[in-house]
Image (cartoon, one colour):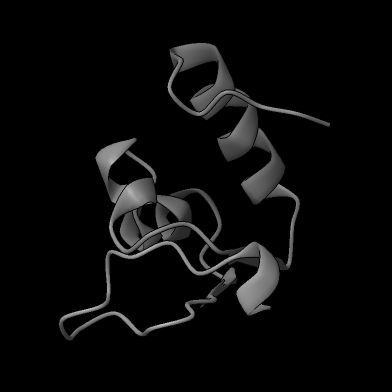
Length: 74
């Protein structure tokens, strides 16, 4: 399944999946889902039991937080 989270339709489908999911694992740059209106708080509003995991190569803070880290780094 491929979703374009830059569209309202993609966000809507994503939230429908969150409703019936146990875990969301994402590996985007820090704040990417928030900018698309998909914050942890919004996910939790549709599914209070959701477990949210953010995978980051360089962490959520610090000077390298916004650098891409996928591909060869993993």
